[in-house]
Image (tube, rainbow, N blue to C red):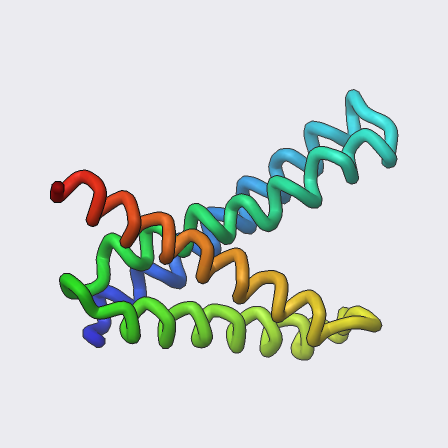
Length: 119
């Protein structure tokens, strides 16, 4: 793995955080808390699937392990971030597992679409 690949993955994570924050700020103006939660929770995990797709797209060809390692690094960064800001949820391991699975689904979708388009 090179530094460009690592920086691309981390920049995708920061862009996702900015988009979620922006949607939250706009949603607080126009939606109730329940409506906002119904939008944000699926969008949060969908965005990790999209990040996983782009991570796999930037990985060397047929190198699933690079994309998987990068997904684990992203999950570690999220855990570190939650620890630093002292906002550790009750079910941290479930949250991190769901994020990692979302990333893996995105990676799998990229590889499947690449194989189907190759045929």
